[in-house]
Length: 179
Image (tube, rainbow, N blue to C red; front, side, top):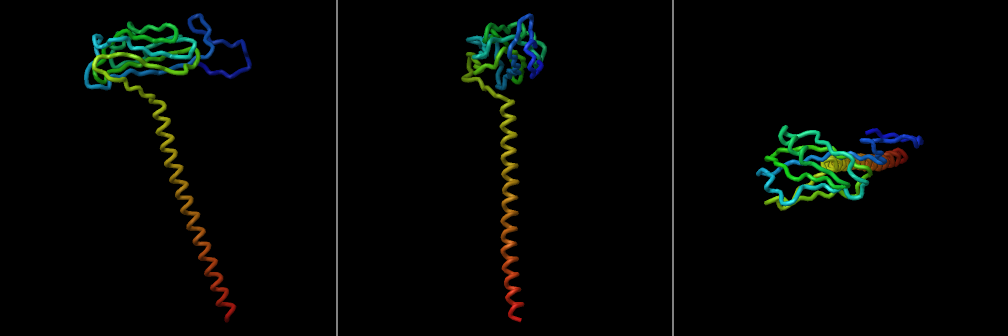
């Protein structure tokens, strides 16, 4: 994808012969972080990702997996229609994963994940990118706070030193004027 800021209104982004007005690319990784395998029989409902508020999904591409069988299985089961991406069923052993790139036309307001898997109360949805940003913000906050604390301490020490120096100067002037 190319980001181009230009007053040129003839510039178009095309995908498979269709114009894409506002392309957004999402990198989504599905990981079985549990202790047990998730098999096709465990799915009571297909796994879905709904990109609510965009103008539709343009393309879905599997770009990585922990092994070739997962890649092929997911690739054969992934479908998208409108804003909804569906994976009818797949098998993931513990710590197995696959990664998809999803291109949408327009930024969705909400990305909603849905599935009903046997013996799984809830899906843990993590935004790794946001977590990294939050970690840097937290580190920045502590770094900035530490620098500010040191600066305040230095200013206080300088003020105290200045007050004591003036007091000593006055005492010295007083002694000299008495002589």
